[in-house]
Image (cartoon, rainbow, N blue to C red; front, side, top):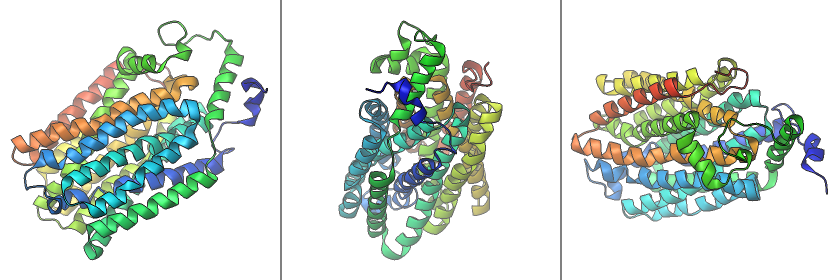
Length: 432
């Protein structure tokens, strides 16, 4: 039997040498982004067609609560499961879980169907999106992780914007249900075939990296983590360490929650806010797509930027810029002003989003990196559920969406301060 150390040369790391798989994984996450993007514009604005009463913000955002709870939990499960059975099987499970979604939307006669459909969307995103970023980290060098995660999130969130724009356009002519049905079905079929036929398993790269570290540093290599045997932590130990014990991991997790609270606002209440101020479905689609596409495209720059200047400054700065942009939305009026706010919010997201993932990947040893990323993504995407409950309640108590923007801005400001004061710099070349 060939040992891992003997097989290490078979799995060279780096974007250039693994370019074919790197591109295929980017295409894969583009399809994942289309699934979530198709809901960004159409569903919140047309929720009354599914029985959501005007002003029932908590009921409206319940679809984000179901999505966030399932996606958050499945992120951790996916990370741990992929260390046992591999990345590709988990990716395929994600697309299998997505199959009921278009049929549930087509047949929905009330909002409870949409809430249930989003349980399956959470399964899809928790398994499929998790595996695209984990696989990219597996096959790249440590110094390329910012760029790699930037490309991953660029492809995914550019698709979020494009998906929202396309479904908003076609829904005007064919209706929301038919548009979402065919759009989702085509996306699921295309992505499943791509994954099944062309995507390679990347778990051997992670195991090879671990073997190389042991060979270079010795079997008793020291780690920055407490406790004996910390290179071989059980699932519960990883979860506790990342969530509560290690200050940098803990700071990154809370930042993940804060940014998804903000995205819950931009997904669930921003379209409603624009609709209440007289904008039509296509105008709303352009603004929300601007937010998603700027978020996506800018990550090509911001991920690579963190490979040069470190992770901490972009993460904290992104939280503060996002908070300022969110606070500005209720202060202005008009499509141009709201578009500028969407651009600024998208760039703030781009500064923090890939670099939170890169920082987590910097810090976690390769043998439980996927579990560490899964733990972070658990807390981050549970932020959708927290945001849905918190902001829905705030909007109902405030009899409108305005107060929810200011509450979100305050959360982001505090989160940025926590990162700046409590997190260490994780870039391998820039400790401190």
